[in-house]
Image (cartoon, rainbow, N blue to C red; front, side):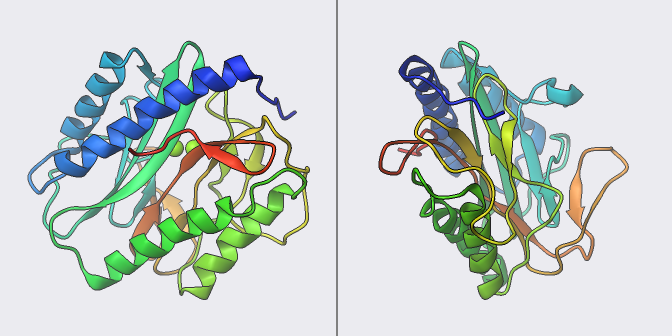
Length: 249
Ligand code: MG
Ligand code: MG
């Protein structure tokens, strides 16, 4: 069941989203060669708590850290630890914050130092795929119009997208109905309505779409070990379009 949000709930989600956006703005400077993923997680945790929120992902399904950090061929759900970032890496940081029981969720991919042209291309295409999906968000459109737009954008630009990981509704739970795949035909699924809150999150690979999960039980990698990127915003549907809750400004 898709729960639409009232004005009061949207206000709380706006605050949660503001904090998530703030974390990403600060990560632009913080992410450098030599930093460990654990340091990134602790830095995010501190900002989130200083802003009066709690990290949404800590203990969610028993995830052990505040944020997910996924490097290079890692797609999603990387666990922060002792790994040191090096020049040329790319890292996706998935950040969630909870304010008075309501969540914001946004992932972004960062360059560490100087990265290859193909990594730059992957990041650009994946971010643009997010906006291609968002362009379909307005009342009356169907949910899969978003999915289809993302897939077409990624594949037209030579990338693939995993099948097992999706966007989602969001509110009092991080993951609510509906599930929002990044692929599929247009014109299917529920009609979009004002007050629906959605996390739209294209993931893209330079190689094939297959993934596998490492032995830690969490980290998802591309099966062919090609590079992956991940961009996500939490939005709420308005009467004529959408508002991004996790803006970075
Ligand atoms: Mg996320
Ligand atoms: Mg999400």
